[in-house]
Amino acid sequence: MFCINVDNLSKSYGSVKAVNSITMSVKSGQVFGFLGPNGAGKSTIIKLLTTLIQPSSGSVNILGIDAIKNPLKVRHKIGVVLQQPSYEPTLTVEKSLEKYGMMWNIPKTESKKRTTELLKDFDLIEIRKKRNEDLSIGQRRRVQVAREFMHDMDLLFLDEPTVGLDPSARRKLLDYLKNRVKTGLTIFFTTHILTEAEYLCDEIAIMDKGKILAFDTPNALKNRFGKDKTIKIHLIKNRQEIKPLLSGIPDCKIDFNTGTNITIHSTKSELVLMKILRVLNDNGIDVDDLSAVPTNLEEIFLKMVEENVSDN
Amino acid sequence: MYPIIRLVNRNLTISINPAFLLWQIIFPVIYIFIAGFAYSSLIQEIPFGPKGLAYPAFLASGMIGFNIMNSTLVSGIIIWNDRKYGMFEQIMSGPFTRSNYILSNICTIGIIGLVSAALIAIIGYPAFFDSIDFSFVTIPLIVFAAVTGSVLFGSIASIIATKLKSSEGFNVILNTAFLFFAFVSTAFYPAEGAPEPLRTAFYLNPLTYLVDVIRAGIFGEITEIVILEMGILTIIASTLFIIATKLLTKLDF
Image 1 (cartoon, rainbow over the protein chains, first blue to last red):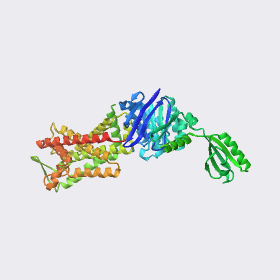
Image 2 (image 1 turned 60 degrees about the vertical axis):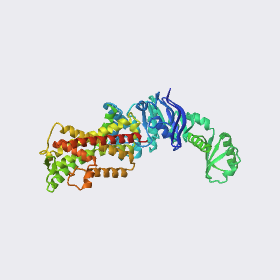
Image 3 (image 1 turned 180 degrees about the vertical axis):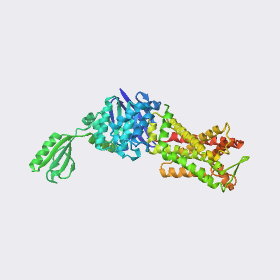
Image 4 (image 1 turned 90 degrees about the vertical axis):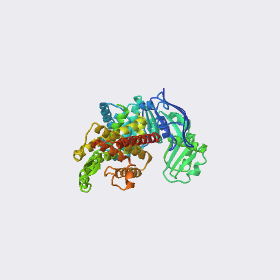
């Protein structure tokens, strides 16, 4: 079953097309990752899907509801954590969670219970009496995300929720989201941190300049676009002559070379690796470390965005 | 709970703080009991209808209107803060409509205006108790003035809040506007005796009408002019409210 159905969705600001005829469907009960560089149109898509702005054309169906005709009905069923910070500066962390629960009509006893749980789950207990204006950016972001779990929802939109979080808080948040998805929640997640998307998302769409460039599971995307492997060599001594030595090997594209650290791209990595070893051995070059790693999502993403730029 | 009530609850929580309450009480107390009695040696009696009013009584009744106006600054501050700190967008992505948001602001300033009027009426009572002419229209008139005045000045503050993005600009323009309203009005001194251009300016200021209606209610001087002033107040408040609502409806994310 799909919880988001978008057909030919476009949004223009004057002559600029922020979203250009997007059609997609997102399955329920999963984390859907929406990736793209800055200015790709991710936040505009979130604003369209959360009914904050109206599209120029196309249709949007959220949880079986026409979002253009019945925006309020949609908003009762979704949660939204926008990219920009949102907080009441003078309220304490604890009070802002309770007030947010009240705004969503959560009964007082239930609101108290949820506040206690969320303060614990998001490591906010120590700062619960601090005013929002006195928090660090990362703490404020944690409060903003935690606050959204004060109310019940079927679909949660998270627009770059980990911005400003340290690695440990980031991992904790991602794990928390994974657990919530197990209870039936669907998450629409935008980020430009590709490792996050790889860790969290069941399906991914890559977007740039208002268009979707690819849409699939992370593994399928890797299989489809990531036949290349990256060979990484670390030499014991600096050997500047390595470049001409390796240039004779077919399908061996040197991406990075400092004389001791060399990164090579190849579609036939096993064969190329063997040839590299032979060259190194024949020339008496001592190797500290040598590995062939599969292309990760980040490289696929960069490649697709670069190709899109050159196509345009 | 209805969405508007929930938003009013939230608005009151974020805008009422000890500093605000203290200011709302201390400022009028200083004016009424220090300035009021200090100036009474200079201004002995102010003609008011067939009778005269002692200056402290005149000032205390003017302070009710002044405080209603001052408390409606909250409306602009709520909107401006909501925009600055991302809460406007957050609320609009929740189970609320723009109408809920606008009406909740009006209700908030209505409540603050009424409480403020009641507070000053209680504080100022010793100053005007011997001139008070309590009748069946006194309370309705003060309630009318509090609500209409709140909507009127709240709309002005809201319009300024929707139009300005920098905090400096917002504070300077709002304070300048409200300073003009406060001192180019009959809140602190009567129009009679003022130089002609200033006297005309007094009657271009809605605070003058508001204060006149309040004084008429408290001191029992309801004349045709007061009824006309009530009509003018209602028209200005409605017009400004429509403009503020339109601007808020068009506010972009």
